[in-house]
Amino acid sequence: MKAWARRLALRGRRLRALASGLLPGRDRRRSDAGLGLPATPDDVRFAYRLLLGREPDAQGFTDWTARLGSMTPPEIAAGFQSSPEYHRRVRDAFGRVADFAKPSIAAPSWSPLASQLPTQAQVDSTTYWRWCDEIGDPPRYHRKQWEHVYVLQALAETGALRAGARGLGFGVGREPIPSVLAKHGCDVLVTDLAAPAAARAGWRASGQHAGSLDDLHRPEICGRDVFRARVRFRVQDMTRIDDDLRAGGFDFVWSLCALEHLGSLRAGVRFVEQSLDCVKPGGVAVHTTEYNVSSDDDTLEDGATVLYRRRDVEELARSLGELGYEVHLNLHPGDGPLDRYYDVPPYRGSLHLKIELQRHVITSLGILIRKRAA
Image 1 (spheres, rainbow, N blue to C red):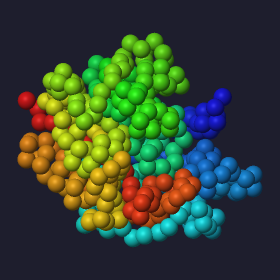
Image 2 (cartoon, rainbow, N blue to C red):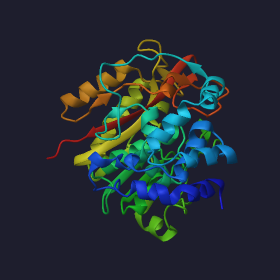
Image 3 (tube, rainbow, N blue to C red):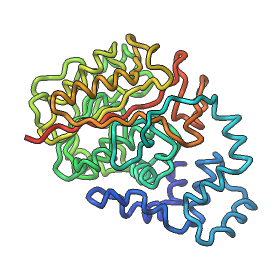
């Protein structure tokens, strides 16, 4: 059994119980209702792994379980976050600290979902735990994991994650999302660059390119027969979306941190605009990209990776709004103690919600766009 599977098995029953009210079609207002349930020893184990980065020691575990009583998971988390060990780990292992600009609105949550940035509070929620359980990856303070959760939550909240819904993915690489979608009954067309172009861009060498369905299937998430019946693969250049795909036949489209690799800020915006041609009236587009959290001026505007600023995102939302699309922005970087930290090269990954890239501090941005119903 893989390491992640062993870790999930220790707390799987607890997470499934917490997540029982979070499935698509349930009341979204109860997204984090499980946090009010009494904590269990599994929650203590989870807190050790996520907050202290280690397995529990025998004496510490005994002490914590003896104190459980009527404590809830947030109270367990607060206790760990007040410990000297936690503060040493934050200070010594999590990189540097900065105070990032905050708009005068509340930090984003999972419901109602906006076009938003990852935060500590989102990772600490049972909504996040539930989706991590679905993709087979233990929860971590990592922005790339957050992107997977963001896309799936967006599709669930908008009603797109349902049997028979048609989805189109761009630049899918080897992400777990197609297997999750197939498991939920969606019919999915996944696309990626042709192999020669992907090799020139370095995606083949880094293991991030998919050249066939076999590269995409996650057997621990979805059976092979179901996956083969519901998922198709096709080569597609994101800078020139094929006309037949732009005929508006899909209930949803998505991409994960792909549009910032198209050569320029404008090229990424053009892709977002063209992707909306693929969506039916009433459908949604969900994309993630790189967001410059340290400056609204200096950024990377051209090249292999570009970084979108607040003003770029606000201009995109404004122009889409004028065309009748619905886009709600929440660019708050978070109020949690871990939201002030950013990882620096060589990246450790212990806390990877924000990182330094070429002198810029960046994070991920999830973009949710709803197309007006006919």
